[in-house]
Image (cartoon, rainbow, N blue to C red; front, side):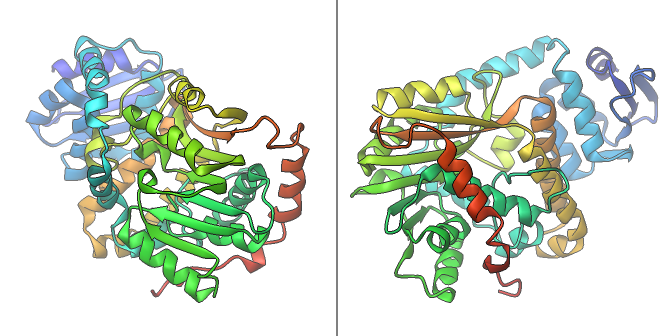
Length: 418
């Protein structure tokens, strides 16, 4: 089997047992190197062997979704950890290298996101049933990297700490006008108004998120102070004292970075501050994994810092602070995956088993990407004026300390029956 040569080259640490569609058994790896799990997988379709050889990054996920590849020993997360950890040190084969180069050359075309296409891409992922997200996210529906002071933190605690961590970098004052680009289900904006007394405008391209966020603002009786709009950042007018964007920049597309930061500069007051929180890659520019692009985030891309900074500089913005969060998202994804398993039957009743396996592959693969493939989270603090912020970072720690521990009992809950 030609696929055997692929795995023989790839698996150097841990142990993989492969059972092909004819029930022949192959062993790969080294039992003496036990820092990675031992996994057994079975192929149920002879044609899958060729598909994996031609384009494993796409067809592996499809095979797991369709049930033509099953994990017989260990878990899917174990299998993906074994593959991705070994991939970091194994030289790419000729087909793998060709596929990666092709994806890189085509990435600007695939990430071309004019407003109409951006709306379609957002709807693909975020306009799914809100019941799905309520079954694996925290009570505040935070769908971005949490902030774990330690791995014993609950998901709710870590997401609360994330909101405080972001708010601390905005240097907020009462009555500040805040713009949130990509406001999700509204939890961060409600938090900023409640804790800092600011006026917030949150924009999203998801009709489902907009409906939920507006409902939450009305339930909290703050709809005059926290407004949510179905709008693209490129169509906005006016100015804001603060701009925040969490988990949205991954949808902008590398060909639109100049426009994005030019609009940030246009929308900020002269003494304004912006905070951009985005997944990124620590190993330089690349291309979106094809299975993720097809099934999860069409038009999406996680950038290298070297791709972001030139666009910031050309927009005339000053980089005031950069923080790299490394394993926080791995722990967040692990918590989401545990809740997915706990609510598997209910999610399958909303969609089906194939959808559940797709979501499992997404969450497990993303987690292992953060553990083994150089994925990180960047938090970039930007300003237009060199005098916009204090000269030391003490104000961040002071705000975070004062607010992080005081809000848990007051945090608004999302009604589970809605």
